[in-house]
Every structure is written in C-alpha cells, then in structure tokens.
Image (cartoon, rainbow over the protein chains, first blue to last red):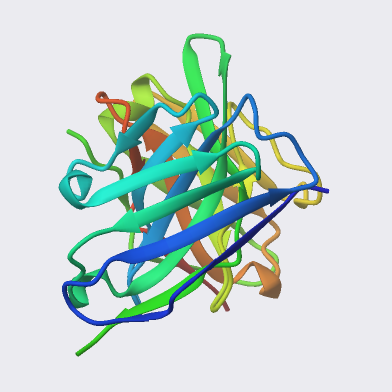
Length: 124
Length: 107
C-alpha cells in the first residue's frame, strides 16, 4: 500500500518561507507526477504545482513567482517552498500523486493518493 | 474559459438519485475527476476517466461526460455520502483546475 506522509512547520510569520515535505512510502517514485494542493479554511481546493520524476515542474500562474517544488529521488520525497507568505497563504496543504492516461479522444489526469494535510497558519 | 463551474449546494433525499455537474471548456479535452471530501479529512478520489471507480468506492457512484459538462451521479444516496464534492481537470495551459465544490446534503 502506497502512503504519502507529509510534514513541515505549521505556524509562520508574514514574510517567512513555508516549507513542507512529502515522503512516498511503499511504492515507486518514478512514472508519476507529484503535486501540492491547498485549501484555505472554509474554501475550495487550489492547485499549487507539480513535479515529475525527472524534475520538470509546472506551477499555478497565480503563485509561480513565490513557489518552488523540488524532489529528492534518493529519499522518495518531494518538497514545497512558498516564499514571502502572508495571511492569504493560511491553508491546509496537501501533497498528492498524479496519474495520467488516455481514453478515446480525451486525456485523463487525476489525483489518486493524498497526504493527510498540514495546516499552515500565517500570523504575526 | 479556464474555470470549472459547480453548483455550490445540492440536496437529495435518502435513497434517491442525485447528479452533481461540472462545466468548463477544458472538459472537451480532458475527462473530469471527482473527489469527495468530508469535514476535517483529505479529499478522496471517487471517479476518474470515462467512468472508473477506484477500488473501495461503492458502485452507487458513477460518472459521465458530454461536451463541456461532466457529471457525478450517486444512485441511492446514503447518509455517509453527505460531503463536499470537487471536480478537476487540466486547462488549456496544462494547469490543474478545481471546481468550486458542491456541498451535498442527504435529507
């Protein structure tokens, strides 16, 4: 059974850097995309970005200037950094595995595994 | 447009059928995936692709797609199905999109 275990600091001050790590246990790191998603309190899901096993990244344009996602294949881990946080970055942050394929004329992309989430609060 | 639109709230009587919809231009290129989220929990994948349920998801959950609209149908809704439901797909730039979510109430 593949599990995603995530951790990182839960309380930050404005202007600090958010740092979270997600470890993949019980399965291969290769052949998948790995993503970060967040959810502000009482609101919906927002995709932050993703990285594939080769290290290629893609970011939400609204966050791109402040976000870095990296991976450590030797440890089966990937990480998220968000610089210069503000109260608007307060959210539960999830790591997730992304799978993809094709079926007929349409592409399939989905998040099949999720971490348990980390609440990050930004407050002075 | 680069967005996915869902009704904010839907209700269904216990044991009845409910359909939750998701609209967006990206659904003409990408299948939607659907996630169930209960309070305080991480989202759980319930439908992906044309109509595929991950192992462990009850067969009362089904999906369909036509044009720019994807639908999640629960046939014979149960009390434990009360949750928020989110659709997701890529957009034309390859970024992931989530719908705003639908809060399902089972009466």
